[in-house]
Amino acid sequence: MQHRPPAPRPAARQRRARSARVLAIAGVLLLIAVVCSWVPGIIGTAAAAALPWTGLALGVVCVLALFLARRVLLLLLIPTLAWALAIAPSAPGLSATPAAGATPIEIVSQNVRAHSGGAAASAAELAATGADVIALTELDGDSLTAAQDALAAEYPHSYAVGTVGVWSRYPLTDAQPLTLGLDWKRALRVEVQTPDADVAVYVMHAASVRPGHQQDRDTMLSGIADAVAADTAESIVVVGDFNAASADPALGAIRSELDWVRPTDGTLGMTWPAALPLTRIDHVFTRGLDVLSSTTERAGKSDHLATVTKVSIRSSD
Image (cartoon, rainbow, N blue to C red):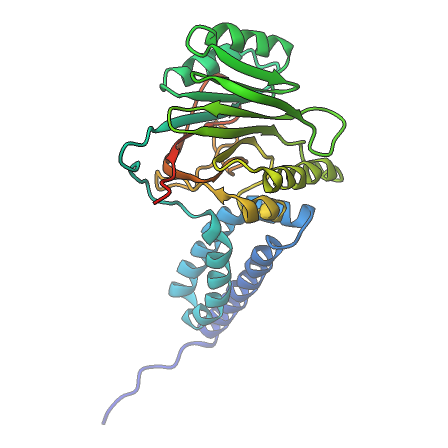
């Protein structure tokens, strides 16, 4: 006579059912978190900042479901696909080689953290990378002076206004302060005369985001999108502290005008906080340029990592 395996004990069935319910609820909550990253306003800003870690949590739930309640895996497919769709625009990219005869241009940018006393160290360490253009944000009076002293010899061309500044090995022309819809200057535009062509470089330090205080930042992000939309320059780079995670809906306007530069080091390019980067709020956008590489680097005493991006003029062929 063939013997059937013993039926699961009632207690075991109850544990499995309870595990399935808990994992299913977790999956639904994670799906809601992912969907929130598409919602404009503070909800979308918070959800976008957490999006990479939402994916990590989703991975843990999937592994638990594999061992405890496999039937839940089908349900978890929905938040997994939604997360993949949400994170895709922020995924890493590939490095490239410059077109024949093109001159690579390295642009670095860092929020040096006002009153940290680290601007000189940041400037010196960024200059040591061999960068052609250095953009610094969150400058106060003392840090601006320190940066100017550190960079004057190697970067004779500079322009600073408000909390932002740019230093270049190449001549600068058409320097302009920008308010981007606010009453104070936290951005600038210059044209860098590179060996191949002039490149319009924007540097911005977006207003901070705090509960109930997001409108100033959103106004600046809309303003920079409007500025580059009206810019007739063939080659544009926008760098700085945007105070917005890569998937933040508030970046939608500038993403529609320029190409968001993907990190080419296989990471998500997180920049803040420097001690344990959890999100990318320092960005690079381009138009009319080939991105050769883009990564991050620690410099000075700042709570932000620097972005290090190498570009070249896009061939017209």
